Amino acid sequence: KTPFIIMTSFKQQQLIHYTEYPGAEPAIVFVHGFTCDELDWVYQVKHFGIVGQRIITLDLPGHGKSMSCNSSNLTMKAMASEVVTMLHHLRVKSTIVVGHSMGTMIAAEIATQAPDMVIGVVLIDGSRI
Image (cartoon, rainbow, N blue to C red):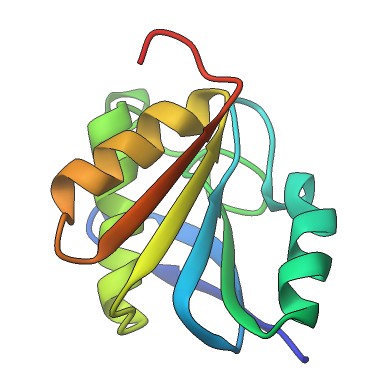
């Protein structure tokens, strides 16, 4: 399936890069760790794309292809809020959020901020959750 690669601005007027692969919901949203980017999830994207799931990968603010931002906007809550706003923009109805390392804290915060949308959370190699 052909991905939609988009860079857009949400709440804090920061450009955030994401890639959306069409498929069935629940959408699987992959959240990378500190100093990483969406490319950490290439094997997972390939697997879940084959089985027809809707997949969204992203570069958190200040990472990868997303724009650098003011360090005061790099809290876990602020980054989670950006992702939640992106999911609403994409009209995601239900999602499973997968986080790795620092992304586990953001994934947990996404679930807190959007409990009606998040039906599952997968935390991989996180700390201090």
